[in-house]
Length: 290
Image 1 (cartoon, rainbow, N blue to C red):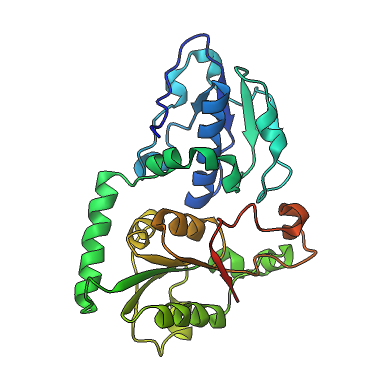
Image 2 (cartoon, rainbow, N blue to C red; image 1 turned 90 degrees about the vertical axis):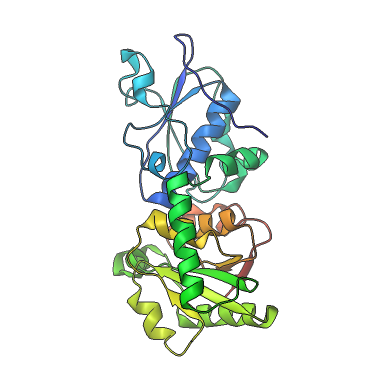
């Protein structure tokens, strides 16, 4: 399915999103905005300095494309989500062809699953990102003396803010070493010749807890976007928690293993999941482990 190329004219209403967070969050928000604009006949407004413009083939529908009366989105009616990590059907009930602003994270594949092919087309890395990732990927295989006919598994270890006291108190969880060892063992048993390429926001931690493993390459020095592009070239994915690893698994399209304990039951974070269920967030067919 071919993606929509939005054009603006004076009669067209606009849709805005209060973009916030890192790369993974921005991808959720843009996917939501794109589909709402497409289905409601709106023009999707993105910031002039939108980070995704430097990474993917996102159409630059910035505020500069519209008349001065749309200089800011702040005066438009605001629609907020009820759950950050579950589908909220009320958000898609807004009238068509009406100026609107959305506030939230929209972290559910259900918002855009009917247009998934278009979202995949949008979230193709631009040529510069592709070339850099492909070159680095080849260098890693050569350095590890790994046969290209083997299976490569991308591993993302999310620590950082998730490992802080504040986030733990809120109810966010991040896997311990046992989860990664279990996931690695799963792929070793499934495939004969496997190499693991691992990135992390705290690379020292997996190096320490997985120091006895000899088939892991630890990525250093990349930006978040560069790591995502690199790991997306793998055959399969081991993600931890959070949105960044989610998108790596989705882009890669292989087997994706995720940490099944996403939140502390009864916590504030648990309230972001409708009925304490992760099914609106976790992509169908992915494998939960602990």
